[in-house]
Each structure stands twice: as C-alpha cells, then as structure tokens.
Length: 603
Image (cartoon, rainbow, N blue to C red; front, side, top):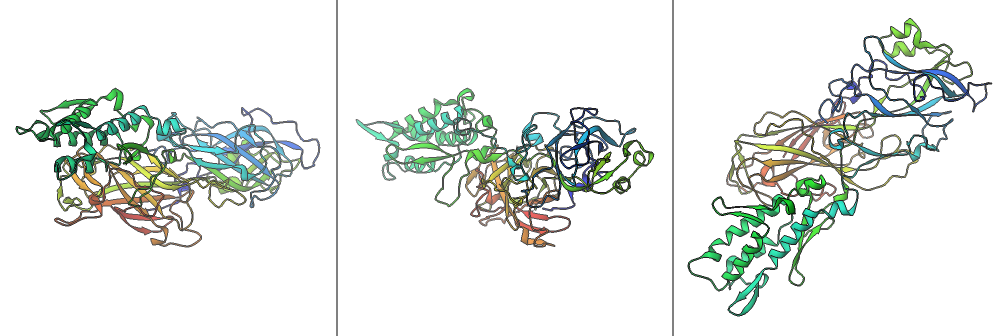
C-alpha cells in the first residue's frame, strides 16, 4: 500500500485556495452595520472572495474524492474570526461564527472567484478558522461518506475551538437497529430450535445434545460441529443448515433404521420448517420474508454479525455483539461499524487585508496563481476601519486522509489452508473494505488537537462502494477503491480487512470452509514504522489529513500440500476485530514513504 502525494495536489482550489469572506445568505446580504469607529468589537463592511475550482462533480470513486481534479462544490461553510493565532484551542473568537452561502455552480470561463459583498467583519481580526464540507449530490452516506460534527451548528454560540469535533457516524444508531433485526432474531431462534431437537427413541425422549459418540458418531460429530457456528448472517446460517440437513440424510432415510433415526428426522424436520428443500440439487433456501437479507437489512457487512452457543440447560444460540471467544478474538459491537468519512476542508490561518475592493480590478481577475492574488493585499494583517478586502493567507487543505486500495493475486495458482489448489477461473469479487482504529478528532482534525478532550470509542469504517465489478483473478492490480478516513495516531498500526465473495468452488480457510458464493475476509496490518522514509513527528501516521495512502494488497499464493496461514489459507467468514492486535493477518505489509505512506501488502 502506498500513501503518496499531498491531497491538495488534487484539490481544485489550487490556483487561489481561498480569498474568503464572511457570508450572509446571499452575495449581497449584510451581517450588520458598518463600523462607526475604529475600536475592536465593532465591524466594518468588507468584500470577501473564495477561489473557484475548475468544475463540480459528484460521487466514493475518483470523482467523489476529487482525484481527477474536479470540484463538487462546498456547503456548511463556517468562518470563525480571531484576534490572535489559534494554537491552544482555548482562544476566544473575535465575534460570532459566520456561515458562508454554498458554492454550487459557476461559469469558469468568466469567473475565478465567488465574491461575498457587504460583509461585516469584526475590527481587530487577524486570524480565521475555516471549515467546509463537499457538497453531496445524493443522500447516500456510503457513497459520499459522512461524519458527525460537533460545535459548528449554524447560529450556535461558538465559545472556543475545543468544542469542534468530527466523529465517525455509526451505521447502527440504536440497540433495536443493531441487535433487533427481525431477520437476525429469527435466525437465532431457528438455530436454537435445531440445536434443541429431541425425539422418542424406543420410548425414551432423547435430546440431540445428549447423543454420545458411542451411541451414534454421526449425530455426535454433527452436533459438535453445529454448535461452533459463529457467523449469524442469512447466508452462513443457510449454508450451515443445508450442510447439516443433507449430512444426516443417510441416517434419517437409511434402509436399516438406526435407533437414533427419529432424532435425525426431527433435526431435518426443524431445518425444513425454515425454508424450502430441493433434494435434486441438495439445496436449502430459507424463507426470505422471515430470514432473508441479514445483516444487509441493517447495512452491515455479512461477517459482522456473530452468534455464540450457550450450553446451559438445553443449549441455545445467542446474538453476540460484544464478547470474547476462546481464540482471543474480540467481537466489536455492531454499533461501532461506521460509514466512511466525507470530504471536509479546513484552514487555520492569518489574514491579509487591503483598503481597496480588489475583486473588480484587472490584476485580480487576471491573476493566475494564488501568489499573484495575495500580492494585492498590501495593507497589513489586521482588519481596520478602512479595510475593504480580506484574504486568508494559507491555502485550504483537506481535513481528512484517504486510502487508495488496489488488489491482485500473487500467482494464478492459488492454494487454500489445507494446501489444495483453488479454482480462480471466476475469481473473487471485492465487495467492501473495512478500516479499523478510527476515532473522534478535534478542531484541527487530529487526535492531539490542543485543548480538546476527545472520546476514545474505536470505530471500524465500512466502505461498500466499489467502483468496479471486475473480479480479482489476475496478478495485475485492480482499479483503485477510494476510502476517506480520519487522521490516526502517530506510530499506531491500522488493521484493514478486505471483503470478498467466492465466485468459485468451496475452499478451506482459517475458520473452516468458505463455500461457493460465500463471503470471506482477509486482513492486513498497516504499520507506520515499517515504512521506508518513516520520520517520527512528521510522516509517522497511516492516515494523515490532506494526504493519500495508496495500498496494493497482494493475496499470497500459498503452497501446494502445505498448511497455509496467509492468503486464502487465512480467509475467515467473519470480520476479525480490527481494534485488536490479536487478529490473524492474511497480509504482510511493506511501506515506502514519499509525500505519504506507501504500502505493498501481501494477503
């Protein structure tokens, strides 16, 4: 994987990143009376402009993240004036927080900037905080990304920067959504019903759980296998019950009835009650209206939902949303799966002022670089009574980082956990990317925002917007998938899981059989200190605001006839907890630092 090139390289405000003004609802509105004197606390009407990008686009492919140089427009634009540099986060603003009107469409041929006229600027202003959000063409939070923002509500009192926070937005926001899916609960009930099967055997009520290996080895072995089920999605439950139903077929319908045939028949009867059995094709289809679509019905990845068997009493399955298994693998709460971040802009800058209205002058309209425009503001760095134009000195940056993921096979001969060759004719469809270790950031879009007290909840981003449908089946890298993420802590590893659908035949992964058509996961660790060019204090974060991280994930080939613990041999049908260092890694990662981190990851 590779984290390269500052994202501002692709930011379309490149020629004049911000001549910014306090807004009203339109370009001609005013924000208050003109200054009657020269005292701090009064205001003066000024003219402000923001540099216009080349064009506006939409969508988390290259257009959504503005990889191609497009500009999507800007909304929720906030400007906060200060009478000094903002460094500690506890500075008191020099006036109220302003909202600039949205930037939507414009004529590039005739205009380079959007002008805000007759805006009342507090005297004594020397610095500004700027925030803006890229405009979304749709309400799809998976496609556009989203963040929960604190402290920037329009019209709210702004006390100091420490009140501003940016938090991953959970996909499930209530217990009812996360654990109360109708289909999810029905699946748990069906599993429990099957586990508690019992029947009359020669006048004795025999429970499936009590059958010993000496009494009937097939029933015993199938029970021990059944209660190890850990993934509770519709697909995985259906595959498990289908396998169980047909595995017991010879016992239930054999020519020589076993004493325990009634137990097998009852198990199969309870499974059949959940759907439709096709004996010719040996398939089970669960009733869609009752059991279908989980956990897609709550917008979570297939491997997120876990079940556990509790052996107390007659034994039962329970939904596991936050627990620890014997393997030491933690299960994240369903409420900590979050949407990708969305595109935010930020600046913390001093200002330049002019006593003239610069926007109408030929030197302004004809300027081709930001330096040319800044050179027009020659009357100091503080708003005075005679100020008529203001410019933010620094360019606007992206407030978030970006992961560019590409995937390929190490070889056209691929082997599973048991060393068997895997058919890759139809390959593996990439359906999602999960990024662990995401936490709330503060007013400067970092975990170390000065003065801020930040929530420590760890989120896992789920990006299911894959801009290509081509299956992974060659040694050439796929197209990139772009995922926006918040900046991470210095020297902190980030765990990433890739979600695939198996388009071929069954193969053996680390957690058992990955069935044809089934979803599986491969995991990688991105470790900053492993990067070539690593520099403590500067380039030491996997995700860095205003940078992109490019990653090429290579699925290791494995070895014929050997036990393989990487590549497809490390595939799981559940999502490992990307918060925990105990996860089994399918990839080894080599990093190279350029303007950011660079990763070559072998799965």
